[in-house]
Length: 109
Ligand code: SF4
Image (cartoon, rainbow, N blue to C red; front, side, top):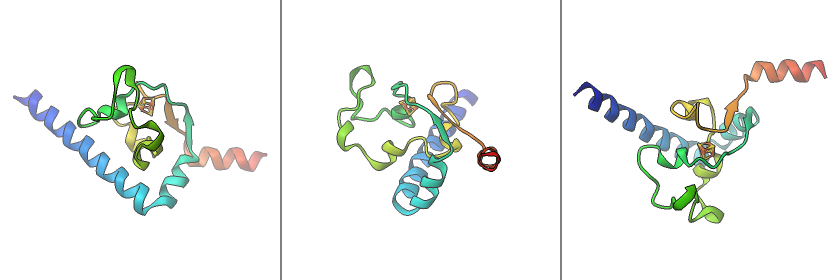
C-alpha cells in the first residue's frame, strides 16, 4: 500500500515537472536560457525523459523519437535545470554546474 502511494506521488511529481517545463519554455525563456548556460554533458539517448509520468506516444523502438525533427520545445530544452534531473541523476547524460563556480571561473580568465 505504502509503495503504491509512493509510486503515485512520484508520478504526480513527474507530471508537475512536465507542466513546469511547458510553462518555462513558453513563458520564461529568460529562465531557460540562463539555466542552459549551466548545463554540461550530452544526451545519451537513453529515453528516460520520454518516460516521465508516462511513456511518450512518440517514443519508438531503441529510444528513437518519431517526431524528432519537430519535437516539442520542452523536449528540445530537457533538462532545463537541476530540478528536471530529480529522478534521472543516474541515467541522464546531463548535469548542471553551480552558477557561482561559473562566475569564479570567468573571473579568473
Ligand atoms: S534523460 Fe537525458 S540522456 Fe536520456 S534521453 Fe533524456 S536528455 Fe538524453
